[in-house]
Image (cartoon, rainbow, N blue to C red):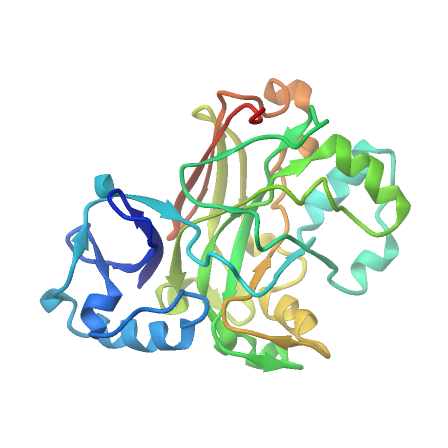
Length: 308
């Protein structure tokens, strides 16, 4: 099942929808006969309801929207938290190597993450600009994991049962701001605080049954800048599996429905790793960056000038 949050052209109220077999999107509130909560607030109910709908999809009734009639919002608009990991070894090695650094031994001991800003999300086709003082705007190609069932001290063996589904995550980064912050020792702050792309939809975990084997999930990933492919990788190359990321996030902490975990950037998945000299420079106004992940779709964002 594909779930999304949209803004109809003639409305100021977000609507939670599910993809219908005919290519339209159907409003869940109309099917349920009662007001629809925000996706993150009502995620367990949404998943149960859409599972029921899936059994009778051909007979769906309710308000429908064609893609030309709405804009995509982030599928989970205000997640309780966003934890973004650093779990692809190729990416970490390449980025550290560009700074003349060896791999930190501690990276191989535990999966590490930073907390991102859940109030700075951009949906599919949303506009993004560099923060004040930055000239080095970058994209990051990541898989987003959406938690669907609460839990604490979740083991890797239990982890998949806590996953609602997956989406695409673009961890936009101001590399020059980040470069000044990270040596202080608390990780990125304003270099990551301004925008995270998320979408276009949340695809429920059952759609990936043929791609999950034990702890491994295999999905092709790529990024295109102005139509030119720059990045390609696969989630199967994660050094730390998704169940182990979930277990680390839930260690001595409660995960809640709607929480988002990012895998971190896949190998080759950003300009910092590839080198701006190879990509034509950092992102600039007028650029269009597209991230694509198999079975999820394409997340597209447009780079614009910072509003004055």
